Length: 207
Image 1 (cartoon, rainbow, N blue to C red):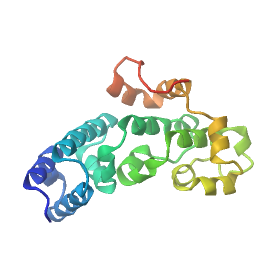
Image 2 (cartoon, one colour):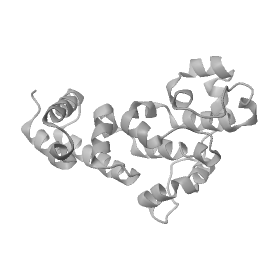
Image 3 (cartoon, helix red, strand yellow):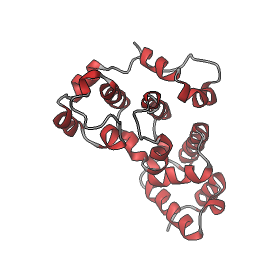
Image 4 (cartoon, rainbow, N blue to C red):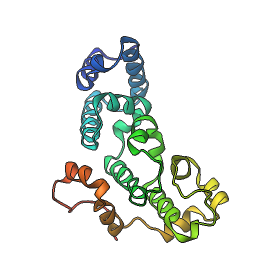
């Protein structure tokens, strides 16, 4: 392993690796970081992005072991758009309101974070489709699963449910009003307050 000693020291201290992982697990984690950093950002940019990632995941409510596993399972989260990730995390709370989901969004974030590469517009539109009357004749069970929502491709979704990605996003657009409704869900209240306090003036949706 050729990871810079200063980077090893920084991630060990920032993530408390030795408190949460065995020595062998620490080596595997550092190897993941080394692979991630190949041909990527400068050391200073990496430190800044890692700081922001840890702060983001703490506000979500993850503990340090969960944060470490999240980064290990998807190192690219370090430079990902955190606003976009937050919106997806909050949108995953919609089905809980109707008791129609077996999705554990914290489990997704920790153990299957790559699933969150699916675009926010697609995630929102699929949820709203599954909650709509038109989906009742094509879905086998009245429950929204991780596979149905995040794993299958747009082509597979169209084959299974008879609606294209463009049509579903057009029918159920993720607008500024949609975001406001998501933010107001009781299930999202604690997370929203940790990120924004009492302010509701945020979001980048234009309509």
